Image (cartoon, rainbow, N blue to C red; front, side, top):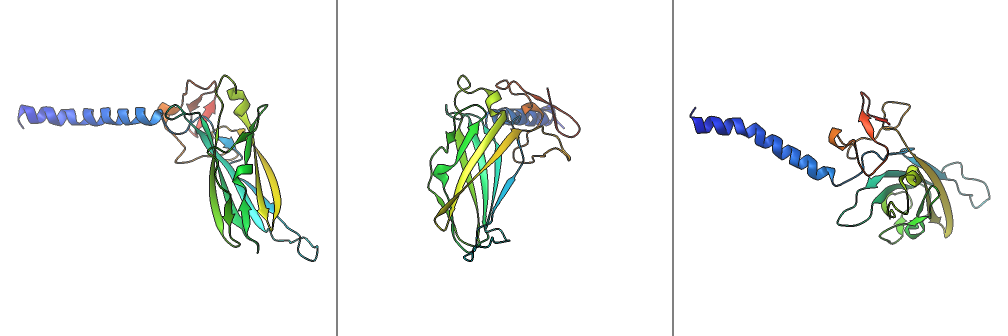
Length: 215
């Protein structure tokens, strides 16, 4: 093997390593803050409506699953954003409407935040399921501290047969430790070692055999 070929052969792993580090650095500036996960992982609310005879239906007419996916980093000069997801199962005989504009999230000790950007209501036909993704812009750190988002109250409304039904779920920031009794959060929101520390937040995690542990 001539000298030039040997030099190129030795440099190839270095180039791949540099490219990989650059890719990690790019991802580290985008996506979700890895140190903010909330429990319960999925809060499920069942709606039992009265039948025409006045007796309660033993089977749920609808099930709404609510979860907080995480907090998104600012992009293009925008704010941090909370990402929430609703899994809607209309298992009754009437169509259901998820009232997107009436969805709110309230930080501990802060004002309620509306869905942003605003979007239309979501219709769910009887016997079908839908997933709804919503986002909430977080105010600047100078007006809403990180302590305020340690606990978040999520409120939503669905309408069945013209009657609104409002539910709430309270989410707490959780340790990222697995397995039971803690909550585990897998891909695509889990990140590796170079993302464990975030200077914008006063908590930070360090790696352990089962996941994150908190200072």
